[in-house]
Amino acid sequence: MDDAYDWGRIAAANALSDIYAMGATPAIALQIAGWPRDSLPMELLAEVFAGGADVLRRARCTLVGGHSIDDQEPKYGMAVTGIAHPARIVTNGNAKAGDFLILTKPLGSGIISTAIKRDLAAPQQQREAVDMMTALNAGAADVMTSIGVHSATDITGFGLIGHLSEITATSGVGAALSLNAIPVIDGVRELAAQGVVPGGSHRNLAAAEDVADLGGIDEVDRLVITDAQTSGGLLMAVPPARAEVLINALESKDDVMVAAVIGEVTDGDRIVVT
Image 1 (spheres, rainbow, N blue to C red):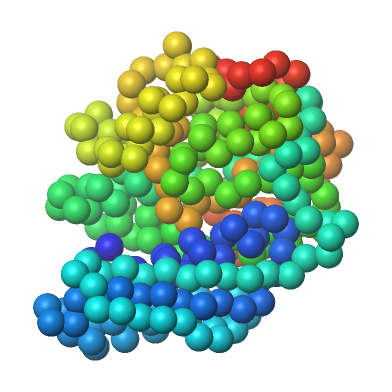
Image 2 (cartoon, rainbow, N blue to C red; image 1 turned 30 degrees about the vertical axis):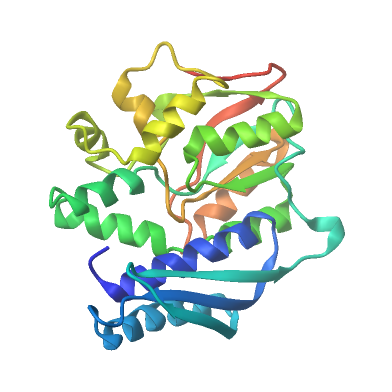
């Protein structure tokens, strides 16, 4: 991101996401920064901190300290601690065959971030990507803990297929995804077709071939579903009997961007995308 305030907001939302993915409530955060003090003004770092602090306030999470160092490259992040009842923690290891798979944010933030670096992203794409990455998964977490899901994860650096494969491997199941049901930010496929793809997404695609059958999908769509995300949505495995109630509840939350049924859990051992 070129905007320091947005950069801070995205980093904070991304750090909080792991807490929400387990059905926990963020409690405290420590922030860490590396900053090239001789080449970038400290006022710019203050904007980064302001963005992170605003997101923490939205999450009702308390900043209790941190550490900063002089560094050649700007770095910023948080370590967040959350609270959950032991009996209600949501893990990535309990998905059951027949569960519906529901995703709460569209894909494509990695590709758009790369387009921003190359001055190829349209203003609307930039705004949509920032809105997606700064939206908290708080509402989605609240819904899944109140209604009940078997398993969940957040979609971040390993992409949709990578994080889904953690669910399938840990749960001892497979999955079937419908490509047309997977939400994607407008214009992302066109950018991918131009080769505007981060290196992490290419590595994700190479790894995905070991766990997923993507034979019927073209290269662009393969890169989209393995795109390395920042502060992506939650992916939930929910019993069919609770799916409609869960979707309706998700759609009622202001911070939930989509509530898309993208496939289901199977009794196989691989992820199949058609």
